Figure 1 (cartoon, helix red, strand yellow):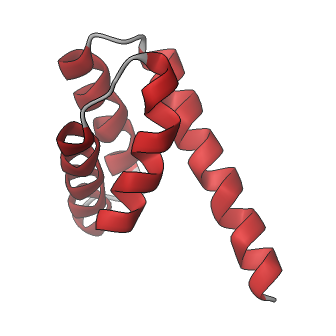
Figure 2 (tube, rainbow, N blue to C red; figure 1 turned 135 degrees about the horizontal axis):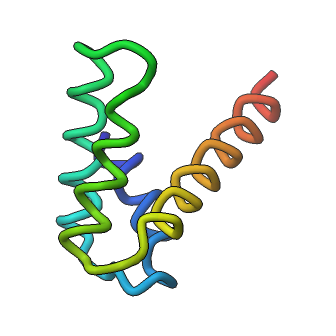
Figure 3 (cartoon, rainbow, N blue to C red; figure 1 turned 180 degrees about the vertical axis):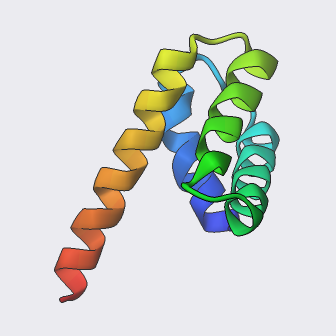
Length: 80
């Protein structure tokens, strides 16, 4: 989770969300909610948490989540 949060933080920095601890907190909250709530609802909570706390647009934070997922898919394909 720490690596996932750090990876997400790299995508969030251009938006102005420069706090690594906020990105890590978002990753932990999102993963915890994904474990207990259906349909990856933790991703939405992660976006809202970081957007509100960092004062950046939620559309940009959502795009950062999308970029993280694209990078995950590329890494999975590279491993195959």
